[in-house]
Image: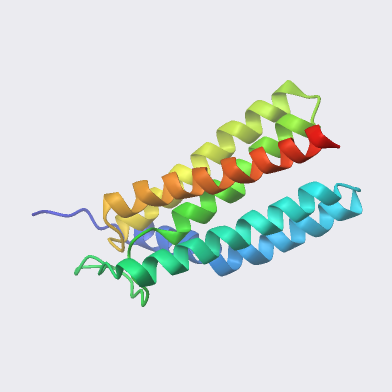
Length: 166
């Protein structure tokens, strides 16, 4: 099996992995939630924090229930289990919520499209870097995307249903 290992891509992938780690995403989400509160978007702020924390908790529980080992030839050291990819779960929830918020709050079609394209790009980039570093199997990434989409969708449905009943 031949591999393509380029130092720049390894370093870039490691940077993306640290920047978009679950803990980093929770911290960034708290900052964004505070901004939402400052702009008087209390329900969005609470939903954002809730779904980010839920995604981290679900990932942790599934990793420890399934205990799937990571690929052997990883380019970086990871200490947790592989399935599902926590990076993928939180990326979908985080960037998916940004898309949802842009479509709900912005009147600018250009901003909506930019947010959607940039967010989907980031979700795919994060998944790619986890594969490039060989710390996940493709099925870990796909499961992470699906779980993240489920949590995001459930959170949005509950929020919209709550708005409809008020």
